[in-house]
Image (cartoon, rainbow, N blue to C red):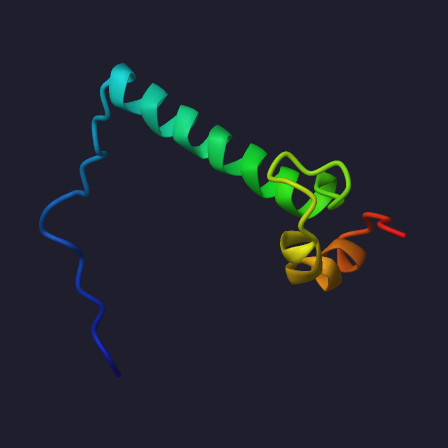
Length: 71
């Protein structure tokens, strides 16, 4: 029968300063908005990056998989 050992030291939580936490939150929010734009909003004709359909075609299947209509 195996003997279970108890850890000798308790795990300590990581203390994250509020300023660094806000930077992580802002970065995650900007990344989420960018992903949402490219997958859900960019339509080629109304694209911020010109009339090219490259981004639209690149994420076309992901748009339908996530329920975004595009045509």
